Length: 305
Image 1 (cartoon, rainbow, N blue to C red):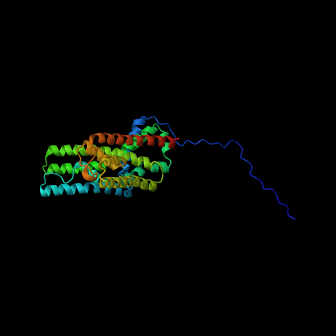
Image 2 (image 1 turned 90 degrees about the horizontal axis):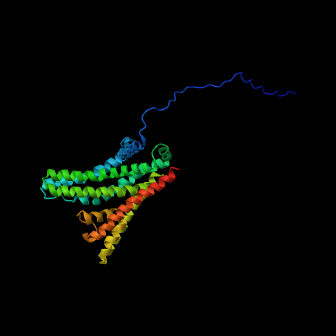
Image 3 (image 1 turned 90 degrees about the vertical axis):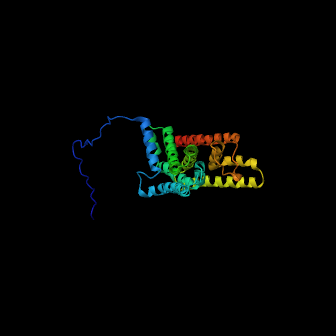
């Protein structure tokens, strides 16, 4: 009967086989630009990303389309004013963003998750914080970038209206005053909507969930507030209409501009808040913006750990 022979292992070669390979790593001796440069770079990158710049062609379609949709009605109004030789524009500067709120909400819903959800999904936030950039820098850069993108979206049609009004030889003083009031209004709207969009989007790393949540918050609150205001007007409870408007982002902006910027109100009956009520509107709006910033700081302190 055959006997199994043990396997022979090859003898280890004599001598030390350790090798050191020089693969070219060298220390960086150039300038270190620090936190401020990193924050500016993150802001620039986020702002460009809000319009798909530096990204794929598919990423550019929606934001650029929404920008065109915002500007086309303004161009049509200018053309009508020029053709009919009107004495004023068909729509006030301060009313334009209120009328186009659906487009603005869709833009926020699409771009707020793009700004923050990808960082959460791919867990790149701790990588940002491993460099000189800190939590406050990250939050400020993202907040400022989306607010700037929204300001571009909402101010561009106002610029079209203003330039068209001057070409139509409408009163320069009135048009300049209205244009300035409109810019103040959309600047406040941009800060508020950017804060709300980013806070909601930062809750989930799933972009689809973020889009749905932002749309739900912006549209449901406005629908509920408008319905309650209509009911209050039908029941002759006009005193409560202004207070109900505190519970929706777009009606907050409407109340502020009708109280302090001379804008006509979209509230039922066309009666906006008084100056005293307008102060409450301003405080609630600024408080919401500050609360959004604080919630984002708290959220990213946990994520960056």
